[in-house]
Length: 364
Ligand SMILES: Nc1nc2c(ncn2[C@@H]2O[C@H](COP(=O)(O)OP(=O)(O)OP(=O)(O)O)[C@@H](O)[C@H]2O)c(=O)[nH]1
Image (tube, rainbow, N blue to C red; front, side, top):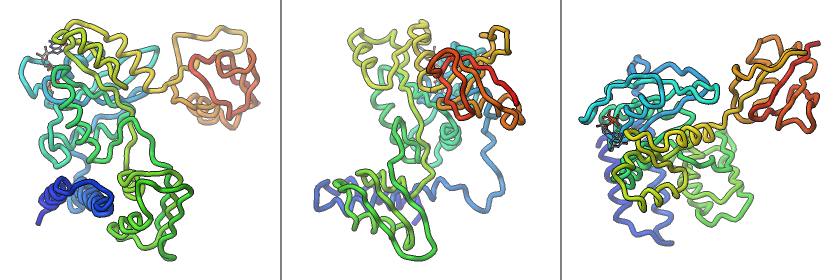
């Protein structure tokens, strides 16, 4: 029996099985089996020497945003509106045949926006060009899930399931679980708090399912079966996602109001240019980028030339960005802005910077 058939069998068994205390253990094991088979399906065949699917676009700019959505939801249109790229959009389905990169210039940052071929159901099983879309989505700092506002909820559910099944977790944090494989010593399972959603017996059986007989597993939270499987499997991508409901021009005000109140959601109309500025601001917020301006002694900072860094970046990151030898030459930094306790503040190399800080570096 092929992997796909095995997956179908397990899915069918899971939907047949009622969810209650008595079946919890059985369902947990089925979930582990399913996760393992899905991973096998996604792993590239060992024999093929070919790398990638000829689809990968070079990562460039300060951050990468992947556009994902069903055909004809308006992905090409938004790419044309937000970036300089001329993506071919027409009034028929499957217009985007290759992955088209564009660049959003916003607040001094260059954000790469990738339009992907219309993702379709079953992409995780290798149907359509979904597999390549998924590979691109994994490398993104943010996913824009574009939905047709009039069919939004079904599309959202299907895409979420699709991404979930290939190990992408949207808007969530990795569970606080430490897992390390060992070569001997058996299974060392420690739970630092009471487990209410799984039992130790189930955790051990899941490890058994993965043929893991020697490991350290320290559970520091109260995980679900899925979270435990995620920790054991590894290779999960935790990515923020904005749900972009397009075509609001075809909706009632009540529906616009309802959708825009949902978490992580923005309602727009590409054709009528409605709410696109708000979407850009949201993208900026979700990327958690930090703009830092440098200044030379006695001169004014150049506010047209920001250095773009990730949230939590330190003086050391800036030094590395400017010149590879600057870290060893660094004596101290002077900071003006939110991260400074008083302005200006003299800081060390581990000082964390905030958005719109101005800095001066003093060398030894
Ligand atoms: N009413 C309305 N139609 C829109 C809006 N945005 C895009 N469309 C239309 O939707 C159709 C599909 O748009 P595309 O941008 O090609 O969609 P796509 O998601 O790139 O499609 P694929 O390339 O097939 O994946 C076009 O006819 C657009 O004119 C909008 O805000 N309102």
